[in-house]
View (cartoon, rainbow, N blue to C red):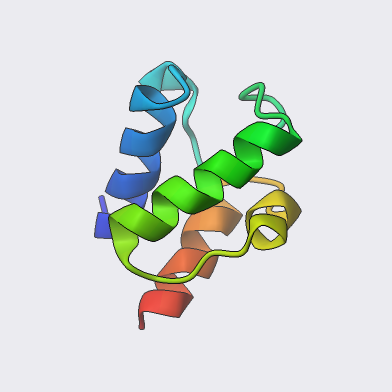
Length: 77
């Protein structure tokens, strides 16, 4: 698991109490019960965890966990 994927999984499980078994690349953020406020909190938590800027709308645009991880991996490169 990449550092970004580990961070995304950790934030989703610890902050949003998402079961790790539901965090798959094809899972949509909506299917994980993240509303617009939760997406804004997710962006902030990931920014703090990874040290890269993550705009609220950037996290909200990502439809799946895999796409979010890919976007954050590209920012860290």
